[in-house]
Length: 561
Image (cartoon, rainbow, N blue to C red):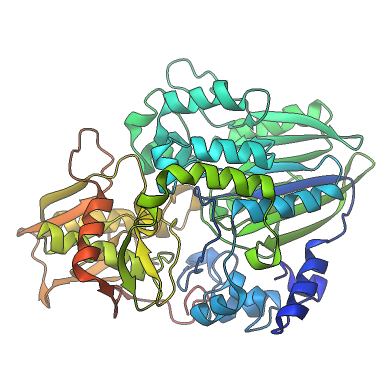
């Protein structure tokens, strides 16, 4: 259960009572220093405790190979000194997932997260709670309330500052409405890299300065740089994004000039981007990162012209809470402590006020959310570079219901997991599909077009320059088999494309089903209706074999189990 197992020397016993006592001791971790940040990110609107399987494939290519965040399974355990079979192993890897989940239970849940935050704040005067974004999207209730459920929950949770990504898919008008109606004077929405496309004016506050225990500090916001590329441009037509490295350096210099003795970046770049960024800008003490959903047990210290910057990433789905303590002396950070705490629901009692709010939020939708569609005989999950079992269910649904020979499904990283024997409810389907552009499509595509699509997404995922990695995992593919060389050159990574054992012909047309089109004007039925129809017909889901590509050149890669 420790974020840095070797630092604390505590694990959970297999005996329930001993485990509970150890958990209480760990969650009461004493404070260190005089500046404190609590950080969660990418909760994707998950208010209730859940299961979430970490990836078995998270490849690091080139300079990223063999280093965080591209470590999975036993490689991650060895790197951080975590014992196999422990609660820590369950939290940070997918090893023996179903068995470990049965032992250690569900994770996350805002009522349990609220309890942990209150405990930590009680010993950390002035601690700031930072929300890294992807908070208002990812569930049925968030979709139906246009994010209001999560806004209300975060206000009660005590969020001080946030940045964003999927929030923008509610549309620019809705984001501005929430800022004016709900967050004003309560939560600071920070994004130094978003400006108007006409005059280059700042859309949001770039940073916030505070004083904590006599120490002046600054938090700078960094929204997802590629929002108009990864998501529909028409939802934010008048705003520009980007990494904006030079502007970030100017902002750091500005807050340092105003006296900030500790400066952190609240980032939604993704960890590989943050690692590069940390090497190129000076003056950041830490980057509290998100977007790539990587639960990284310890910070990576990156050397730059100004010294060192700690780079962290705090997982997803409300499963973790990052705790960063600085000891600031003589005008600078002298020392730090960092823990990425897993939120085990069975070891943290639910906060009564948050539990009541969550119940009230869900009550109007309870019947629809709990509607059973089928039963699963195996673990259903999404996370991974190429495919997951729940992804495959979506692909199979698209091909069967739409009568297509090939299906594409976006490489989204969000989506909860199910254990063997669980009912698949409408809520579970919405956990995988609840977006504001859910339309399904059926298109005739040539073999050449299919290859171009796969090459483009592969370059987005595996480009050796992190600044060209624009979010998401590889597009999930149904029906079509192919080979991929992640370390290959752009345009030459994909080969041996086959359908039913026969080579795909460049000039032949194929019927392809998909969903989540970024172009405006789509009108196909929502993907959740397609998947629900498929599940009702099947009744039982078993023997799901994810359609995985043949991956070349990755022998010994520590991002592969």
